[in-house]
Image (cartoon, rainbow, N blue to C red; front, side):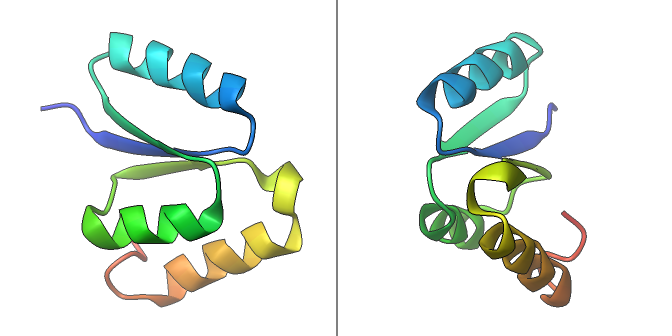
Length: 77
């Protein structure tokens, strides 16, 4: 069974291209445009891998990663 990947990127084109390529490789892919939306998605169904655009939100994205690492349920993502 292929893994589940969450793509977090504010640019729709990036999300679409990555999703199509990863689905062609038989991954289950979910996308989010914002970190707020991603938090909800992760709480509902934690992915195996997160691809996060660090350039758009900078400090907020780094804090998001720190929060994931500090949480026991998401620290292995």
